[in-house]
Image 1 (cartoon, one colour):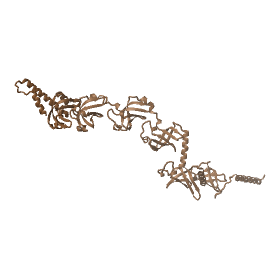
Image 2: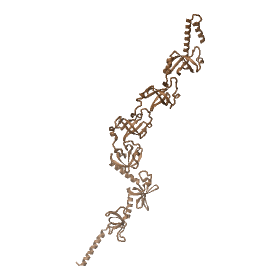
Image 3: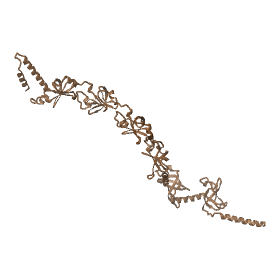
Image 4: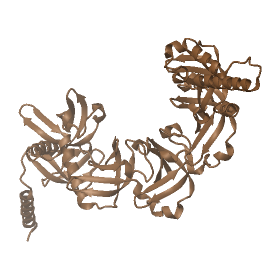
Length: 571
């Protein structure tokens, strides 16, 4: 074959190959979105093979993430042949077309889209969805909790649901972050209930406080950390242990899927101290503890974290009548106390404070024997007497009957006032019933005993009239003892009336009478003028009888004459 024929054959083969190459290109249209592969990258451009006779080039700045050779990328065909004869493509226009397609699809199928909250405005926020598309989000749709400070959400990138979508001349889009959060949190919560068991360790953030504990955010849903599960010990306020915003580890102790409740615990990272209580404590032990709470019926004392006992108000003092524990103690006090009993199953310990102190009543009789004289202060008055403070918590009673041997007082205020310092005498000590009796009159000798010895019944006594009453006459005798002459012992009703009889007497007059009754125990002295007059009469009669028997001169008056004269005088 000659050279010319060879050249002709080569030309025919080359043309066939070119035609085959051209036929292998994908049919593309300008404005169409196609997928290509990155085949080359330099400092300015990324070269993409879209299956056409030439490669398209894209500026590196159009890529949000660093591109890599082999990556697939969508582009829009701008021109099949540019000035240089190569295809012109745009990644940005492809991204924008895909964006609007995804936006429309998200609206119709209720799928979330990503965006960024860029501005707080009246009633809500502006949300940048990309490609200069700004959506509106109402304030009420911005979060699942009340938003107090809208500015804090500005700059937040999140996902949103499209609640309204129109695109005529201008896009009008309303989005909701709340809806997305609610759905996401619901899915997380369902996953938690399905995969979690009691005893699991979880991590959460302290969200809010209540009087009974704290709510912990477990990632869009809450668990409750009850105040009783914060510590085995006494917790007065949740904020004493944790603060809002703290990130903490907890244990799951209860799960109720039906009620959607999750209970968490901090204290369960430690062993229950009650499990080893009887290894550390025994009944009768004297231990130290801290006062944690004061109530009207007693005081709670923490012996160690998780071990808290109650000292009843009756166990606080041997002698003081405690109306409320705050009279003796305050929260935080370190005290010494005695274990009176305990119940491990119920987690209860009975404590006593007074048991670690000496009971002052144990040796009261030795310290204040009967007959001992004391100078003490009047604490308060009662209708029946006065109370003196013998020592702190121990009072003694001075009864009205022991004020005076002779004077009767209607009330203690006639002689004493609270705060008076008075000398008294211990007259009785009742250790079992915790009573001490005091006496004031016992500081002096009993004039009644002296009077009884000096003037027995039937003897004549002298005195001074102190009062004349309707029922008789009062007479004061020795020792300032006052006796009564009852009206029947003053006059003879056959002879005169009581009114006429007492006219003979005046207050302050001296008088003589016969003792008819004397009872020192009842401070009673009864006197009689009638008996005194009879006594005088008998004495006179006896005198005259004696004179008549001894006188023979005949000058003496006969007894009959004397009696007759006496009867005339009485008439």
